[in-house]
Amino acid sequence: MPFGIAALAITSAVLHIPKVKREHSIDYLGAFLMVTGVSAILLAVSIYGPQNGWTDSRTITYLVSGIVLTVAFISWERKAKEPILPLSLFKNHTFTLTSLLGAVIGAGMFGAIVMLPLYLQVVKGNTATQAGLKLIPLMLGIVSTSIFSGKQISKHGHYKKYPIMGTAIMTVGILAMTTLSITTPFWLLSIYAIMVGAGLGLSMQTIVIALQNAVDFKDMGVATSSNTFFRSLGSVFGTAIFGTILTNRVSHYLQTGFADLAAKNPDAVSGFDPAKLQGLSNNTAMLKTLPPAIQTTALEAFVNSFHVVFFAAAPVTALGFLLALMLREAPLRTNKDYAAAREEAAGEAIG
Image 1: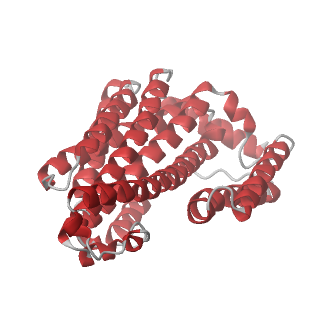
Image 2: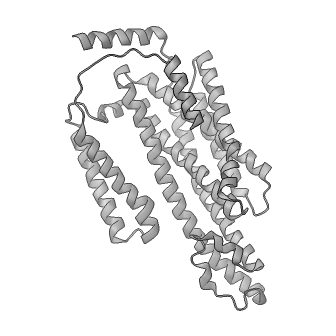
Image 3: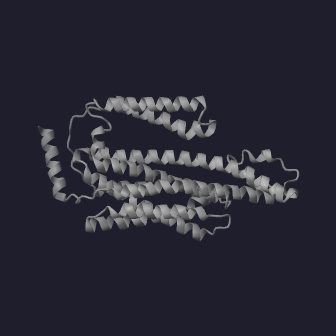
């Protein structure tokens, strides 16, 4: 809240953008189809699929409904007077590429932001507040490299290398997290988190700059908001997919780990009902009630599951690296370009 108030005060005092009044036709039907289509797909992917199974009737119903509504949305946008998402933008190489890149970065970003606190709470026994505070190194990485890359782009006018470096660093950081264990010290985890954060900071802001530099001035608003939309979609799908992987792997490693413990040390599991382990992935508070040997086995199951998640996330961010290599760099627009665009827009409004 305090930061938001400060940002509002600063932008109100410093940011003065000329207003040009135009008559617009709001795409109500397009907005409805997009929201309902995306919502149905997200409900299937993030809630019903993980909870009830991917072959459950509700999962399939929501997924199919979402796809049908999305197809209807695309069909409508082709003939809408002022489409909420102009499909012509996808003919722009940079727009299409940065939309894909935004989705990939969103998946990687939220994969790290969601999984790290889970690791800290489940494996390290931290509270939710402590786990949140321990994300500060990740945020420091994001903020510091965002400022650095922004200044360098303003100074030299080149931006392509930053998402390339960012996605590479992020991939290395996520791969480094596959080495996390029960005894990993926080300082080492902080280094990995800073790497992921640094990669995000170098990438997120830069692809928006590339996008805004590539589209017409009249499309800049919708193009920028579309990039945010695709990044949000990527984050939701990434979180849902990685969460499903984690849950499935925890169940697998708990079963195999308990069987190995029973074979090696029968006394450690004597009198213990293995059925108690079934709901452990959804109720990690039970960990504290387990006997020491079984608790260690359960923690190792979670650690191994986190490894699988990070191994699954690394190819996603590596795909981002390949997409960043294909980004086309163009000279940054100057103040004269913006002034000319404002005059043109004002002329169109008067005419």
